[in-house]
Structures are given as structure tokens and as C-alpha cells.
Amino acid sequence: MTQTKNLEVWLRGPLPDVPALLQPVAHALLQAREEVGNFMQDFPDELLWERPAGVASVGYHLQHLTGILERLFTYARGEQLTEQQLAYLYAEGKPVGQDKQSETLVQKFNEQVDKVLEQLRQTDESTLTESRRVGRAQVESTVLGLLFHAAEHSMRHVGQLLVTARVLRDMGNGNGNMVD
Image (cartoon, rainbow, N blue to C red; front, side, top):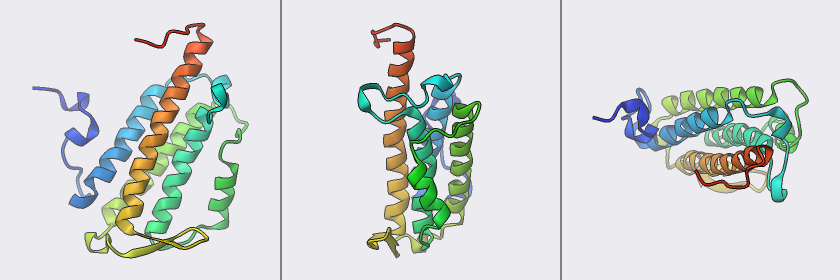
């Protein structure tokens, strides 16, 4: 029998207290957290803001992962963004200028995942099809649409982060061969 910890999160079974229809969202966010945590271990801060071939930096992806979860879950609650949230959005991709930047950004992402998991636990499934307005243009979505988009958007950025980090590590090691 396969050990549960070796399985992807979605194969480990339902999460306690998360509504059944929101299990895939919770699983994706926990998978994102695990992958970021594993891949960012010992990631050199001097590479955090590098942009190989002009792609977004690892630092940007870490900031964006945290910010997008906060913003999309704010909309899912039926709220609009605060000035603080907008300021964070406009600062994404800019170095934060502190020691252990990688570690700090990963920790902030982990904390945000904890916050949104709690919101998922508190979400009544009967509200999932309720309309929500997004952004200044007040584009219409639903609670479920926002929560699903938060999960898929997060996984997209995790994939981009992993590739960029891998390229940067290999470039730093003088290894142009990225085949394992």
C-alpha cells in the first residue's frame, strides 16, 4: 500500500471540516504549499529577483501567490479590496529588502494558505452560486468561480515559479542540462 504522505494531496482523502464541494480547492492550495515549500528550501536569496529570459522572478511569483489568494478570497466574501491590498498588488515583483527574503516570502504564502483554508471551512455550500463582483469594473463571478480560480491560478504560478527557480539554480551551477 502506498504511504499517504507520498501521494499528492488530492489522493490523501477529504480534509476535515472543508465542505465537500470545496475539497478540490483546498487540495490544490495544500499541494501548492507543499510544492513551494519543498522546492524553495535553501533557495539563494541572490537569485530571488532574477528574471531569466525576461520571465517573472521567483520573488514575484511568491508575492503574487500570497496576494492573489487574499484578493480572490476577499471578493468571494463579497468585499472589495482595501487600500492596503491594492498597495500590495502594485508592489508585487519588487524586492522587499530584508534578510532571508525567500524564507519570509514562503512563510507569508503559507500563512495566507492557512487563512484561506479557514475561510473554506466557514463557507456555506449554499452560497457557492451567489454572484460576486470583481475589481473596479465589477465583473460578475460567483463564490465558486472565485474559489476555483484561486486554486487554478495558484497552481499556474507554482508551476512557473518551479521552472524559473530550476533554471536559475542550474544556471548558477553552470549546468545547462536540465534533464534529471
